[in-house]
Length: 111
Image 1 (spheres, rainbow, N blue to C red):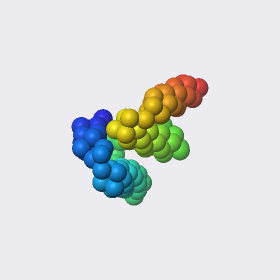
Image 2 (cartoon, rainbow, N blue to C red):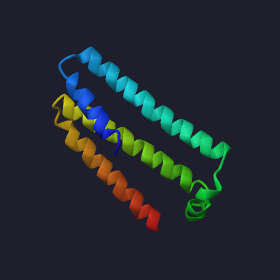
Image 3 (spheres, rainbow, N blue to C red):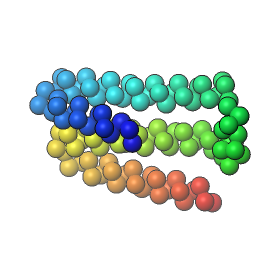
Image 4 (spheres, rainbow, N blue to C red):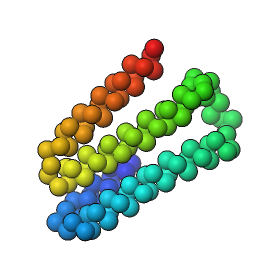
């Protein structure tokens, strides 16, 4: 993921300075949320014909559900990077929950 190359080094630089770490995390969370929200709104307002084959594979709300899945997957990634930065063992649980969600998503996508 492209944000890995940017967020984790910023978090590690601010690991000893908790207010700066909180500020970096808040800004990262805001940017990820804004990009996901704006991307979904723009797609809904101005659908691109180039995406019509993808929409055919994911009819109805499935495309929106996929967008939500990708958004939450990115949030879990952000939280696991934060936990790794502050040396919390919960980072493994966060990564495990992401893997479980992905497995559940693949299971329901096949059925």
